[in-house]
Image (cartoon, rainbow, N blue to C red; front, side):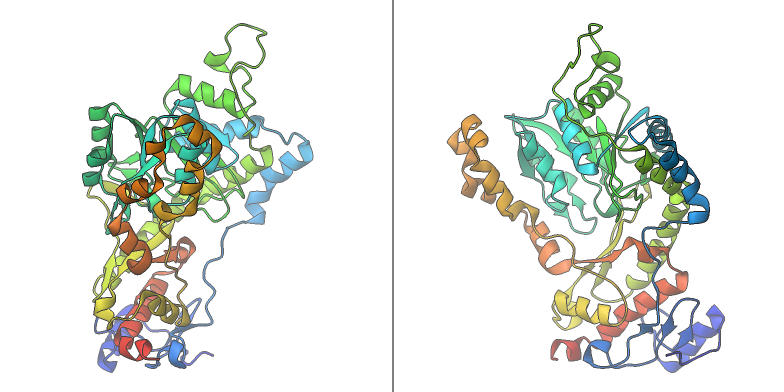
Length: 461
């Protein structure tokens, strides 16, 4: 139901709200205004307590984006041409992705998980090795270490950046440490300058998990291009969606030739060719993508830069608004980050400023006001898959019992800041919301403010 039909100018809207006594935190509040894609209702009672939602009749930007009039031409050409296995369209996608990132080579594979698996395999990271990784990430960032027979060692986070804390890396390095696997989680870049400095100092390999960080930059250089390899995901929910898909990028020709051979059954390729007619040259598997996936990827590439710019613009604006609300701490980017990807918009929630309102009740109230949100990851360093791996036949066969003492391992890999981040503090807003209007960002902030002003009532419901 639309309560107002007058379209205010921004100045009139702010003035009206200030006179009405709302929006004291942001300078723009909850007085009704019809927007292009949503209606804002002036009600002080929280929606979770039976009041009207702040934002109603709203269609948030849908995901994934597909425009038949422009996107289907290439896809239909592929489908009708009958060449569906990897061929020239995949080659074209790889060249364009490498060029966009400023990397020498790209290999498209079935998904980001196997981009990570293949990269560790072809860098010969495996049995007996330790790999440093963040506990605040998706399971694939750690499962790839275990798949290759290595042991993950968890480095606690810097909660305000949501990233592996560089200050805690060196204390985790042992003679068995072989690599660092920094994860640009949520699309926010890690502090790669410091991480690469530590890696050089200790002669460690670096595999960047950039599966959520398409086109993010540090000093104008794209993430994924700092380490020995960079890995990306193109799964449907991602900012660069292809349904399924992934990619490895690197400037190391020998490494990329091995990855290509590995992803195609171990057949000869480039420097792996060896003797002519030798047949399969390395142990490999099948990780090839299809031509129609590549065609979808080429269509998505056409709008990725524009979408990334819009996400950055809206994220910066929303950050400036919610940072004025007590108890809300927006994400912090490292000072040399020139662009983020914003696969998610994260902030920290401090319940002490919300009358001790638990995070789950805060999110319930925010969703009731019309704002999609979630609490994000659970503690990856405490899940049963680790104990299961340590108790498996091959781990027990290779590693001495003291290396597989799970109770000791769990204690040594405690990450107290990550624990608090996962269980009490982190709140995420999905990336497609950042493709909305500037007014949408204002009203998201107003919804958070509304919950703040009514925190005591919400807590006691």
